[in-house]
Image (cartoon, rainbow, N blue to C red; front, side, top):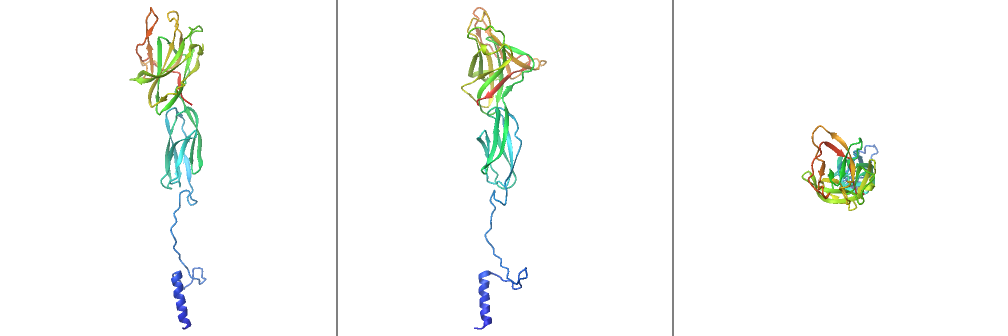
Length: 310
């Protein structure tokens, strides 16, 4: 066999093994053949070095007990990666982007406790956000001015509050002062939590009391804890304040003054969130029977604060 024939056979085998040959030499001018190899396609996975996850968050807005706030995370290159929002270490919402495109994720935060809570967002094995969340109690802590209404065994007063999301009631506090240093034995200040009944205080849910001597002769906050921590589902509730007097009421009537702030006096009627009941008192026996809840003569708000169980 001639040398030329052997060379052609060798060249044909080379082509079969390694593909096409550019006999004109490579781009580098070395005269070596360019060999093109097509391999399997490679997909970049979320969180890989080729696509670095990025996160930014909206400010955390101060809130009020039982209300909810939205926390928005804007994420990029985080497709399929779950992110969890936590309040005081408890997971409350989990969201994830479907792909690596820049995506807003909205977390719902519910204010179940008043005070300062810690909000964190975790994902990919790390804490991505850690911020304080300030939550105010329900009601009004305004104590300016010197106006007040008397509360006694025959004069009951009530103020309402609204729950947006379920909470457990912890305590209610009032800005009160006692009228007299001399009180009858066994007299108590009673606080009733009531359901709403067509815009008025209705059925009693729970009640607590403290001796009237726990109040002071000057205006001060006094707190009434609810040990049962009743759960309040969304809706309107009332807090009724009254005096429980077991001694002879014909001789003396114990009472306290409940501070309020005037909203408006010129509209000729009260509002939808305060009520009073003037009981019918038998002048012979001193016994009082309930009448009906009625609006006040003008618009005012009582100094009362509702807190959740801790």
